[in-house]
Each structure stands twice: as structure tokens, then as C-alpha cells.
Length: 180
Ligand code: SF4
Ligand code: SF4
Image (tube, rainbow, N blue to C red):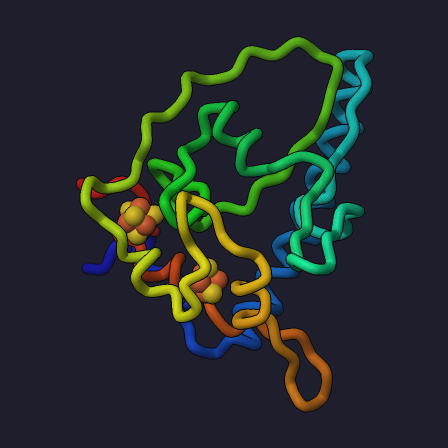
């Protein structure tokens, strides 16, 4: 019997309109969860709590290199919280959920302890993500945003947004988490 944790049709489908639509919905859902969570934190602990948009909107935009940055780097915050390591693909890899996590954050003045840092989870000698990128956008665990964006983000004839590439995610042997 198939392990449902190892199926991810929405990630792997070539029906990119479905992929991009539900991907953006996940961000909206996550933002709502963050907002409710921040409110609860303030009520329960008498602290300050500020939800951070998990994707857009963001203010930083460098037009020439098409580089966007959020208020904080969700990926780096996740690494410091012990949620995973950054793979050669530049995607966050979590031991249980692989590279399929969307990260949200709430900033607070509460003093919290982080979990232990994860080791580098990439497989020795693997370079599938780097090798499979159709525009050679990945190097040194970073993505050249201009190359990636130009290749990846499109629109249908009617103007709906599409995300036309997620090769670096789907070729990764760790996309469903740590092997074994
Ligand atoms: S999404 Fe596609 S273009 Fe962008 S880094 Fe991954 S493989 Fe390369
Ligand atoms: S494809 Fe290989 S090198 Fe790339 S992130 Fe996954 S394990 Fe690391």
C-alpha cells in the first residue's frame, strides 16, 4: 500500500495552474493562522506579538536583479528554530516533511528557547536540484532570483498567474523527508 505521506500530487503535477493557485492559498491560510496565534499569545502571556506575512507583500525589491526579500528570512529563522537545514537547492529541508513546508512567523518579545539545530540534511554527493534547473539558477545554496523568476512565473492568456517550474523541489530525494 502506498504511504500517503509520500504522495504530493499538487507539488508534482504538471497542471501548474492548480499548483500555483493552491500554493498561494496556503499562504493566505497561514497568514490567518499567524494572526490568530499572535492574538492568542498577547492575550495569554501579556506580550507583544506581530504576525509576519509568510510570502507577499514585501517591501524590498531590487528591480535589476529581480530580488525580493521579506521582513525576515523565513528560511533562516526556521533553521535557527531547529526546523530544518537549507539544501543545495536553497529550499528548507525538514526531516519529516522534506522540502514541502511553507513557513510562517510571529515576532514576539517573549523569551523562548529554540530547539536544537538540525545537521546539514543534504545527501552526500547529490546535486540533482542544481543539475535539473533548466536555467542554471542554483549555485552555492542560493538561487539567482532573476533567472528563476523569468523562467518560472507566467500568466495564462486570460491573465491568471502560473508557476511553471518546481523542478528543484520535485527531483530532490528528500522531498518527503529524510530517507529511511
Ligand atoms: S524553480 Fe525551476 S528555475 Fe527556479 S531554481 Fe528551481 S528548478 Fe531552477
Ligand atoms: S536534490 Fe540533493 S543536493 Fe539538492 S537539496 Fe535535495 S538532497 Fe540536497
